[in-house]
Amino acid sequence: KGGKARAPKRRRRMTEDERIQVARGHTERGHCPVWHYMNAGQDTYHVNVPDLSDVHGALLKGPVHMVRAFAQCVLLSRCGTLEGSGAATVSPETDRQLQERLDSFFEDCIVDSCFNLKWKSIEIFCAGLESERRIFEVLCRLQQENQVEFMKVDGEEEIALLAKLAKDAGATGKDRYGVVRAITVDDVRAWARINETGRLEEI
Image: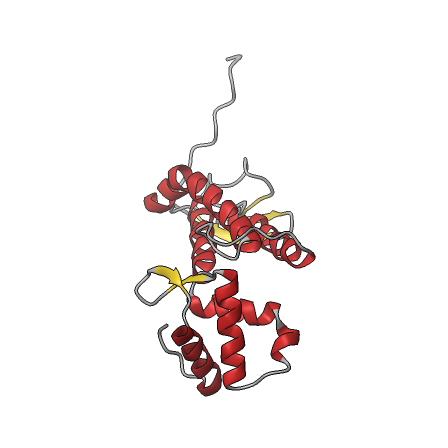
């Protein structure tokens, strides 16, 4: 009496004739076995069986990983690396890259959802950032950022140009062993073979 209203008790069982509850906010979801969530463009169905590892991830690991992911978005956009070895660059292109990564961060990493999906979204987003560190991806970005120059060359000249750009930029990437190192001419040749043959090989 006179105190806070108690939260509805969570139920795990559902009868055949029971209607699925529609939730339109965080206070209405999670109290019944199955619910239909409709809010801010989201229209999804959920089952109230949280995975404890996901709860642990969302509550304890999530905040740390989100801060790390935000910092990685900035470093990848401004420096092209997560090790801080590249020189920070501010330009219309890096501004565009940063805005795109931050838009994705707030849309795909920070998800207004249940514990299961909340932690899974953080994991998937961070894995995507990690993939950007791979040598092949770093070289693809270098070529894309210098498209005009690459339109004038082909074959060995293309390899030489990309190797020079990588060296001048101090570009680093993660190799097949998970080691972050400077990109070499051999890496560029492997990148060229993949693009020519379509066969995926480890760099």
